[in-house]
Structure formats: C-alpha cells, structure tokens
Image (cartoon, rainbow, N blue to C red; front, side, top):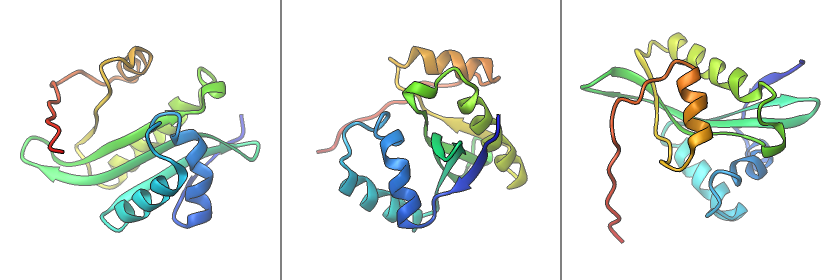
Length: 142
C-alpha cells in the first residue's frame, strides 16, 4: 500500500480534511470547521492526514502539552478514518505515525478521549496497546 502522511497547514489542505473529519465531528459545518481549525492551529493544534491514491483516508488532530500526571504528552483531539476505508490499515498507519511523532517530540505519553459509545474505536485503541486509565468528566457551561 502506497501512502504518505502530510500536515494540513494551509486552507486548501484543511478544507480537504473536512469530509473525513465531518464523520467524527458531525456538528460542524465546513465554515465552522475551517474557522475552528485555523483558530486552534494558532494555539498549537496540528492537523495531519494520510493520503493514498490521491485520496485522504485518515485524519488526526493533535497537540503537545504538559501536565503533572504525565509530563510532556501528545493529546489526540481527533482521529478518524473514512468510513469506506476502515479496516484497511489506514487508521493503524496514522496511529503509528502519531506515536512516532510523539516520541520524536520527547513525549512520555500519547493520550486521547473517546466517546463511550464508540466501541469499535475502543477495540482499536486497546489493540494498539492503549490502556483505559481514567474517566473523563465534563460539565456543559452554556
């Protein structure tokens, strides 16, 4: 399988990622998505995508941060493979790329949150060697 991982650092590449990320972030229309990604990139958010045969197959949004629990870490905000391309190895390749990128940047951990209803994603993360280490709690303020 021929593939490349690219960074979506300009508006054209960000826009190309939208149809895939829309499958995970269904609440965002394209305009809101573009504004949000550009704003987050100014705060250290990175958007990477895996392309094969001139088609984007998987997309990941991530950032580097530090906390008292783990020290320096990569937090993966978004990780999604195109519905038609699932179980073909694209998500695994992008996940492995993220782990290598985290190591290259001196991170001690790669972390992410996953919705409690995403059972297929949970099986994938467990197969990739991740552990369930906490419950994430949230309170809507609006």
